[in-house]
Length: 148
Image (cartoon, rainbow, N blue to C red):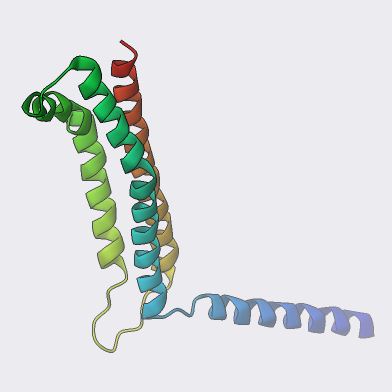
């Protein structure tokens, strides 16, 4: 009987600790949500800083290879930065950004919805993945043209 009481006591202690850990995990602040937004902005900035210069180099290479004038270049290069697929990536990204920037907003005196924090992080991840796919598509498109 004494062993049974010890087992029950141990189980209650574990359950109590788990409940406390879950409650602590669900505590969040407005700053946590702002952090998600800042993280998304930083990731997108880094992605653009990494990809923009080499993409511009490839565009200039294509301009030189084709012997385009400046005006021709502006016209002929447009499809490499604007087409229906790229517009789709941009629309998807805008949708993700809207979810990220509005997802954590609460009214005055309202506690933030901590369950939403994980969803916002997942949305941020999908936003970055969408932008990575956009860059990959644009690079593949221009590299194919440079290979002709």
